[in-house]
Image (cartoon, rainbow over all chains, first blue to last red; front, side, top):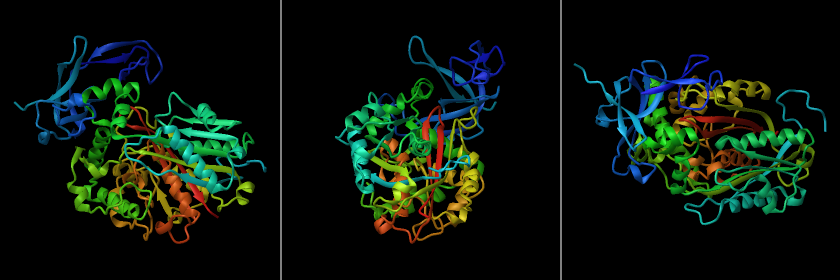
Length: 112
Length: 391
């Protein structure tokens, strides 16, 4: 999972955008994150806002705090909603939704 | 017109009257009808004609491709001053502030500020899926559930950090519904029990049915003019003692347990020379009970995190020490898009002018009204507030 890193001030940028919200520079490079983090907060969507999602509810919408610091919004998969908790460790998995787009989603990191 | 000597003062300006259209579920009428009808009603209540108006402020989500100039055109109004509100549910109060300062500066003498939309649930979902580029590209693809999913995340974190309970939040919905039951214009007038609230259909956990306002058609307008002029009109003039505004408070955060009102609330109280105990009613932007609670915290009625306890321990009914959303709020009246950021002001002015019917508070003097909106990436970007008096 990649985020933009500003080449002028060095900060990570999220959500993705054309210029750095810290220094306004438009020089950045896409930087791979470790792909792990923990759940900062979440919601369980039972009523979707578009019929595209009718067959996949409930959806666990979550704010994930990546180990690198930034918080991102995604959904939690491979986990029943009732087992999701704030603080739960998660790792990224990708769901291909089109030829060009793979959405980063997160699944629980199981204890060894 | 005496010169304005104190920064942030609204001296010399008064609200003459307000107007509010009926609210409609699944409206057939277009947004422009609600804008014009709200203006017509406000002017009639003020006792002036549209030819005596020389400024117009409009806030509306569904208005494009129309705008303030084309709405003026549709109403046959010539303007010296105009404003188009782009701050969501905060835009109406911000428009009132801009209009008041324009009157102080002599740019116009009589300005109508109006907010309206003709929403249905379906059209609201369509709008939220493409509300701005951030939401469209990075939230909607996850099936976020509209703004309800976003504020569900906020409520859960507030509960995690501060122990806020569903029962505390439910009291807001229940008491506001009591107020709506005696508001002839509210869409929801059947009593609501705490049990109903706690066990209602789940929308985006933890938010359930009675956490969510219903998008509808409706409009609200307010007439501002000089204090001298207002004294000669039909209703008791309402003065603005203070106001405040913020956009993108704490840019790097989007789960906003605290928001922009925290930055200007004490300035407003200082400017007004008031204490919190002087407030006779507080009309907050209630898109969700959690936001009503956060506004009470950020406006300084209690400490951050104490909102739940404060609500539980305070009589927020019409008979209480701090009447909250005395008309029922958006949760029980309906959310008419940008009009949702205006109904609190309409209700406050009606109360202060003695026109609140069965909801009338006994001899109120001071109202605090707040606005909120323009959801960007997860958070509501804009906050606004005004302190009003009939003294």
